[in-house]
Length: 173
Length: 88
Image (cartoon, rainbow over all chains, first blue to last red; front, side):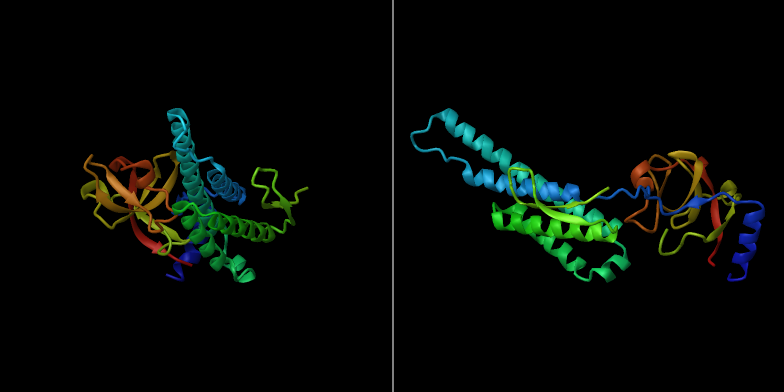
């Protein structure tokens, strides 16, 4: 068929044939590690809130006990949901954005993604601040690599969130 | 349709293949995009749906937009069977 292809290409130039698309992901090209970072910060925050939540005592009223359980439930649900969001967002970057040449330039990328997945799973399953911190570190490291692949410089700053943890942000403009 | 097809490949389509016969499982077909009638897609027939339509999927399951997104397609949308697939 090697000979047929140039013939068809020549014909295509004279009288263009309709294009049949096979790979149909909409190539929007819009990627950003920010969602993953935000989710990781949320997981850290939920761990801190769970830790600081005053436990009811035998003297507590029914309302106080109910409030404790309601708050704990919300914090745990949000923690699990955002750990899953972080995993999802990192998977998108890993599966759709990063190309073999990026991995060549950053050989630790696969291992970093693996660590992020494991930390996120642990942070979701357990009330484990260290796992949340590990997830945050991994997402920041992924963000740094992401922006490097776009030749955008980054800065590590204290995030303006109650977590007061680090965030990697691009220096745009 | 990666890995079997790649951008820049040509497909020669037999528009008469389904005038008599029916699409069979595994056939590679060109169809009009149900979500964009001006566009064409190339997909593989996965199965005949219970509704009478055809369930088409791409070979590159991770990235393909196909019947998993837009549902089974009517036979009318199928332009024809891929008769020859020409790689560079």
